[in-house]
Length: 126
Image (tube, rainbow, N blue to C red):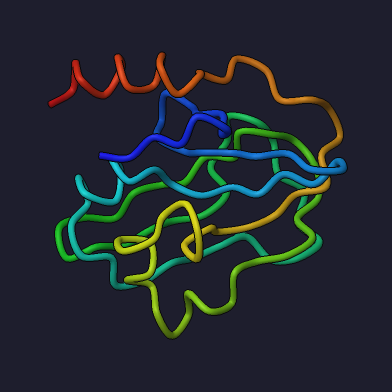
């Protein structure tokens, strides 16, 4: 399982990177592997206000449906529209083309885990 060191992580298996006040959010490879084959993604609409720690979308796989929680508060400024036609990108490239949405943050994210902390968390869940 890959856990890029330049990203922040949540205990609910989202990843985040912030550049110039815009946070890009996705789910981790651990989450994608746990879900199995992803067949549908419901991202928040552009213009929606999201709140840190609250559900902001869903990912549906052949096994189940899981909420995606926003690791930050702010306004959604972009969604990854390519996932409409290719949701399986999350399985094959969760940290690259499989990002879900981008948020103009209203406050800096708090309580994020480092790659090392996230790896320890997921080792306990295997």
